[in-house]
Length: 454
Length: 176
Image 1 (cartoon, rainbow over the protein chains, first blue to last red):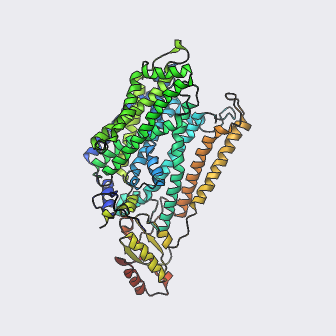
Image 2: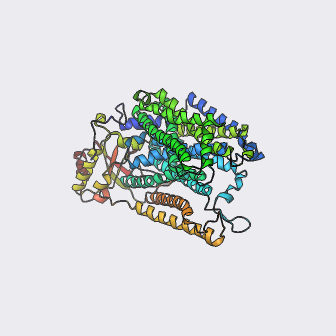
Image 3: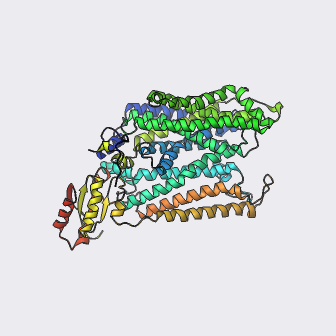
């Protein structure tokens, strides 16, 4: 039997019936796109086209188009890679970890958050692929295939190879998890449609009929996938952090990296979910589904993960001092007071100080404040990766080779390209896919609170 | 399908009424073909008497396969086929093989389980499902009763049982 609570606020407001849920979500798929959507879509497609110039230049001319030099051999591209992968953590966290914790509020936001995850991981993958220089040969280099001259294999001792496995597994499992959830909703759209749309969504729905036996298996699959995706999502950023932590570069060589990176990833992922959801709920009038309660809960996750990140920054500094290793101490002093002091203090302000504002209920329940802070957090998280990567490299063991890193136009262009790609994909998703998981929202409609009872 | 099949459909608005109805209808000896719902109703599989899904077992077996394949691959490549000295480490550096083994375990477990789910529930892009009532993916729960399977009970009597169990509508549906 369902347990109802008279204390809790309902998850869906506005006294929605089951049919209202179907209608409110499906109508955006069925209606002709409005002018605002076209403008948004064309803008992002334009950014994508503009950025493509930089991508073509990089592939045509080579990596020399980037601002890297012999001291700073890793900078802009890996910063963007880690930033996008981090953003890609919220979707699976929301759908998998919150499913295991039986947090029913996830049902209104998991679909869009998972879509965002998938698109962010695609954007992230652009950077290592482009950094290969000849990406069409990438399969020979990254996958365990023997090379052309014999059976020389890829190196399984290298965290870069672990990354290949982690990111591709994360991408494919997230995609499957997302698609399994979409099947019943595609069936709903199919059953409302006629003509070509019925054929297309009929194929996309894989012939779903909503039989109790299928639902039983669906629930079982969701639970096991959630159980598998939870350690997976934690493993991905752990392995990304190994790219740095297993090296011997001062500032990278620390054991705190895995938990610190995972917390940072969740932090930036939730910020990006908020940025996108605040726009989506406004444009699609979904305020009854993505309520202030949802926004407040996500802001609380941001306070927690932001505080963990803050503690990690301070701990790093303390350990650098406590270790007694001069190179390590210098790396951290140089971060805060060296030529990149502005990047360090941008990071500290955006990531440590600004999320603390969410302790005030007025701020965490304000749409405008949340939107601005969600952007601030993502700017801060970009600087975090930039600070970790560039400041640890630019003044290395030999002062005669100290250098600065300046991004080239191609660096900026490739970053723009991924922004264009991300938003183009997201707008296509918002138009052609149900942005809210209708079936799951219906399943919590009645049980979430007795205030909803008709 | 070579011969016609005729069904009686009970339409229910509410999941709690549906759960009681399934128990009542089964109590009278009427065999339920299947119940179609717009969303997962918890406890429905229990009152319908379905056995627990064995998909978790499939996931476990595929996961074990993934671990085995990953470890075999890495030990074969790094230790036997082309041993290389990397940073003076042992060729068979087991701790280094854990991340890839974990990822492949998760990958095979997920894909294996989902494939089994697709096959067992007959989910494929070209599938043509029998839709009893278009509202079953919107807001109604549809209980389908196959007349041929309940020849011992009069059709009118089945309809009466459905109505008294709380069905808001009782319809007929035939497939060729």
